[in-house]
Image 1: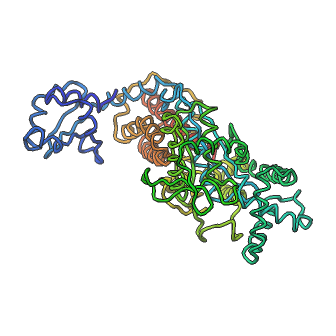
Image 2: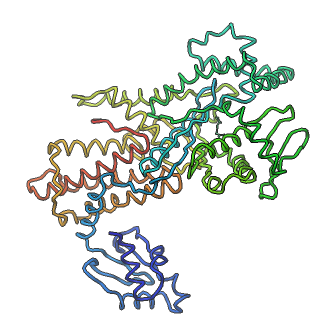
Image 3: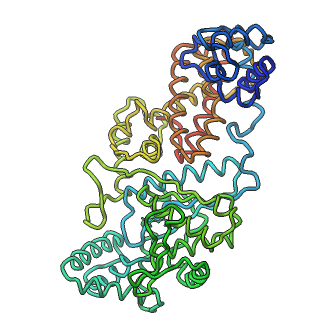
Length: 567
Ligand code: ARG
């Protein structure tokens, strides 16, 4: 039952204003002493030429108040609606029971979405920016799938660029000093740092790297072979992280894949007459599109650049995948760049359907308490180490517990440690910069993953106590006390929360919501004895516990978090 809609229709019957418009004004009061829903009359004052209080009274007098409402009050310019509690409860359980995958809709049916995420750079460490990216992309990947979209998860590996050529230069110089069979990324990273130092000291080395890059692009077999080796080694390390996080990609396609597709892209762009020469490079002036910064699409030595590969990849995607949306999960620092890329794609005459589907999903910088991490300077943090650290810290906490009976400590530590890292990365709105503090992330209390996981474990142990004997045939009127009703109200928002999380590509809506559910459950759990003497009461409360378990589990899984059996 959509109470907002019912209220809007009833008001519309009295004042003859479109119910959809009225529905959008309806609020949920913070304090439920002011009703379950509230309709502010201020917005209608101008149109109806009456004071808000007069409007409120006028509506109330004309309102058809049936058994759905306990009462309707006028308070200043507000109409406060109190819904019959048993009806709220029944309508929620009806909604829940009607959908095997409660929370899902069929909004994605028949639609395809490419979710590009993670996209680390070969031969460089997977740094914490990539961790945030991967966690965010994975959550979106899950969310779109859950809503019925055909999702293509896409890892746009950085296996090209001048930095890559630098590495080949380093390998040529010092390759025999490093055994790449052991800790390949660490060694490659060391070489990268070393060659960067040399480039900074000696301009000619930088120049040589540029030339190497050009040759790599032209397909110099020795260089191509080296790059493929680096890729192979790097993927071994990246896959360790993906396995830990449970991430799987449908496509892993490096930037180098587009090299032979770039000439065709230049051809299309050339024809538009918008590719012009500037200081020996080719650029697109985007002033007509309202973007002040021109975009360089070809370097002076003719070598392609990042932008060329992105443009070629858009062409490739549009001609091979009939997508409705193509999401780019990428750090905020590339926001302007992607504005440029999307604008050029439009200039190139790509079908409007695809252009409209291109979406930049930016995120703020993730910092560790020590400060910003940069690969180039060499003070990078290895993500695998960071994840292991979280797991080990959780293990220590768990080992201090009294009752470890039947607990798979490795499994629990892994799920909780990883859950803590993932949850803390998805807690704030994605565009905000954030600091990852492992100690607060793994805390079992506060706004953390472990806190939510702990609540799921609680629901599980209640269900185990009744041998998972869950009766659906319950007396709704038992659940109208404040803490049950509040939990039910929160649970009934799940669909809405998932819908807006998807619309805004904002998994933090889900994490915040799960905290609300967990807190509401905790109050219910402490106030109402679930296992009790009265069978009818117990059945009703057990069922509410069961529903909570489903919602929390599902929500965590969508974020990419697993739940242990005990903790
Ligand atoms: N590899 C890049 C990096 O690590 C991100 C790639 C983003 N995706 C793209 N289509 N340009 O910074």
